[in-house]
Image (cartoon, rainbow, N blue to C red; front, side):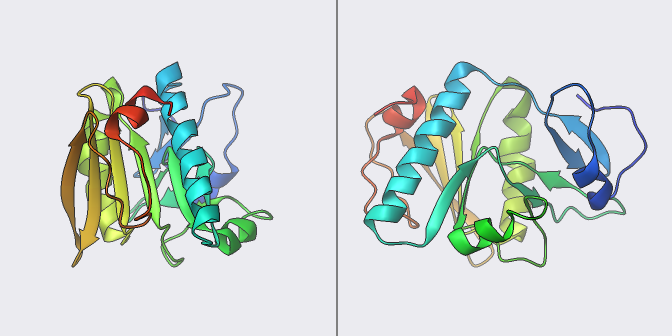
Length: 195
């Protein structure tokens, strides 16, 4: 759903507040209300945040996973700004701590996160599989997960020479993550939102 308002810059978007309690992405200067999502959507995001944090600790990586907390400025061409809010983001702790005293947005001139996850819902199918796939590759995000409860699959996109190579996981297939090579997690566990 697009919110009828004047076109916004990134700075105006970051300062925008209304009484609705909704979260918004910014697409070509227009506010796009984000759906609340199902309980399963939230369970999947929470599971992945916990699993990724656990992997960071186990492998002694100075990274953190955050869900629904960080916007990523989009490289969409055009006159107006865009920003996406991934369901889960993995980034360096130092970068996360730097966001503590300012808007939690990773701008185009900042290093990209290591990994982002989008959980697909009916209204976001095209956006998650097409628009965000393109935008995240231009941002050079090394790994992008598309978790799709609608089709029962998880698509892992690994950035190779500027383009994403996609591997699809179903059922009890173990996910092979380049970011977390020691990860022991199946597509069914992710899609169920529990271990």
